Length: 382
Image (tube, rainbow, N blue to C red; front, side, top):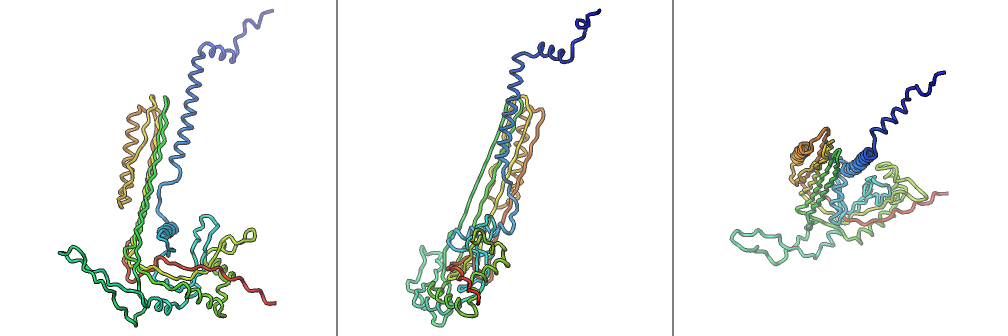
């Protein structure tokens, strides 16, 4: 009988094992393990680095809600309550139902409300201004003089005059925020880099502000009378105010969680108004981000860096210049890295919001008020 086992050809598995034994050495395995480890570490670095740099978004055009929020924040920094949009029909003695505390995140409801009445505080304002000094307007300086020739005596008040406005000075507010993030990775197989550059500038100026106000004691006394008068008392009750704000602004005003309202409301009485005939508000934001990835022989990589955003008002021109700089940097990175393959991505964005107006009559842009809790709802008749 023939010996079949000695003459049979080796199996595929045995052939592969023999090839690996002949060609794969310990040094080959070590080199392959290092290559895989370097690729894994590099990929992890690139993923985390690019995610850090690429987080968020480049600036986009602000919507109406953003404009109102930014204006309100700017005016609140002056130490007064904001009015958006600034309006003429806002007076000392107005009674408002407002949302005073918002426990709902990012709802944008704070300080929104409706006017529910008006107190005639004109006699109290005029009476309070009697006897107060009134100084002469600032004189124009003569071209040849070194200082202003200013009258030292106060001016006489007209006994029959109505309400008078006093000057108020507010400093211009300028807020700047710059941010730059960079991430890069490189090794023997590939190189990569990413960069993000953003700038935000906000300016608010009230060149000339005027104000008038009423004594707080007089306002509180007349509000107490208004809230007890039969024809107006229901408008001071909690149910009336919450129903008004729920239907007119947001249904969540009436929502109760764990026995408490999610949103607090108040009755506000305006006791001082700040007016202006000119408003200068400027908000500009620009940003750029870019990334480049190269599969190379030497692993060289260069961040696609951009020129820091300028504070020049021409936001569009600034964004175009940033895009051009990023594109040139990406091309430079590719030419320096003897690349086999790779790619780049560039994104820029900017918006510029301006309000520079002189108005026919003064507009109210801020105010001060006293706040009261709504009155408890009356017990239903039995």
